[in-house]
Length: 301
Image 1 (spheres, rainbow, N blue to C red):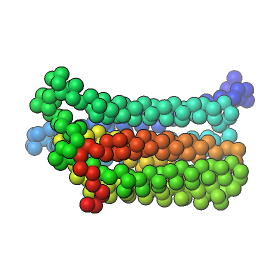
Image 2: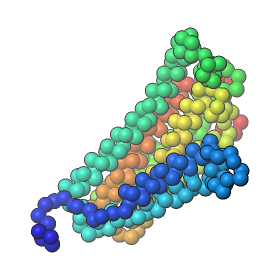
Image 3: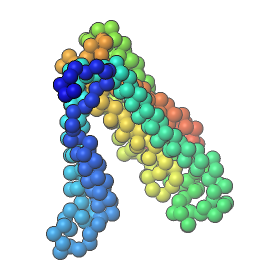
Image 4: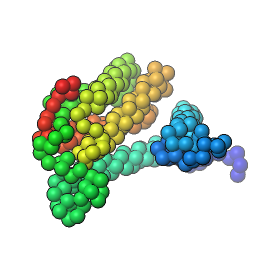
């Protein structure tokens, strides 16, 4: 009966525009990215040429704007639901399963990059011998051979090691913040989260510095392509995680969480630990294990 008291532990959400708006934003963003990279119109007399010419960022930026708008609106509604008490133990368990499955999907994403990296690094000679020639595929397999001119890998014990220590330290500060929040120590939780955000920004700044001093690019060799795609996507995840934690810091300052109910912060901590673990694999294999690929150099040299 309409208006009757709820007699179950599930939360039935109110009608929401966000799924439709999010789908629209994702479509505009994808379409705009295609236009930006390839273009869909060469007719300069067309009234749509400005929006559809190659290199035009208008549609892509519009898509980004819609997605950001959805993030604020949709996640804001979820925060309001939690504050109203709609996140019952059953709903909270569903949120935890959802975050875990999201992290598992991210693990599979990076597993694909590592698979490709190891496959090309260990078996490039077999592929080249089987007819997978550089002329046929536009790939320089010699980029995996030791001492190739133009492939100067980073010394893993310069900036990469510093960034590794930064991320490991950030893992301890976010754990401290989570532990403090569990015990009702809001001051400790706030300080730990602030330090984690600062360390995340430092990591990103050093990675940008490293990229600007690299002796190889993303094109021209398989090593360059896999290096930038793997470390670049990880860098994007660090930025996302830093924003995630910055929002958590704002919510901490606003008093949104208690020691009993703080899953939003817990999800951010899970995500940050995932980012830490992925970097350890990247450092161990992409930087250290294949440091002898070419002439090793330090950033800035």
